[in-house]
Amino acid sequence: MLIGEYTHTQDDKKRISLPSKFRKEIGKKVVITHGLDNCLFMYPVKEWAKISEKLGNLSMGQADSRGFNRIMLAGAVELEVDAIGRILIPEFLREYAGVSVKTKVVFAGVHNRVEVWDESRWKEYKAKILKQADQLAEKLGEVGVI
Image 1 (cartoon, rainbow, N blue to C red):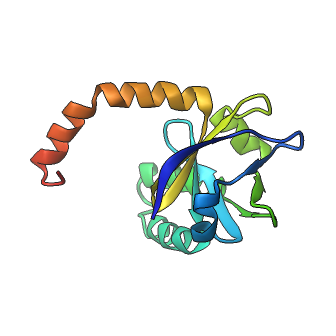
Image 2 (image 1 turned 90 degrees about the vertical axis):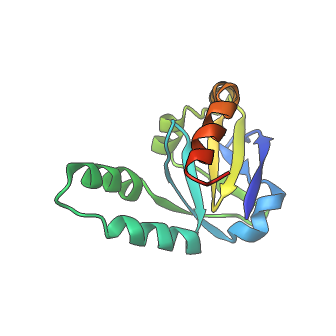
């Protein structure tokens, strides 16, 4: 399971080291794509196969399904993790997430994926969600999750 929050800096060549806690579970290749809330979703290849299968089974007749598939699947890139655990995120995904060479990157483990955030966006998002935690817990309690 991928859990935890880690902040990393990028090198001059725009490579980012993956947190050592994630490297074994992630493996030597990852799939990274557009995420929600202006972050990126990064999946181990085996997990991505499950996700892409579910996405592929959505109805092409529904505009919402087509749009979501296009964002998730067309924007997906398989990346090699180098010998010292670094990845190079493509420029179009970096732009989407607001990640520049001058910013720090947060890797947030979220069960079966890692979310990749610009540090300032992550801090803003996290502060907003923490303020709503009690209400979110109430809603989850109503459907039997908590």
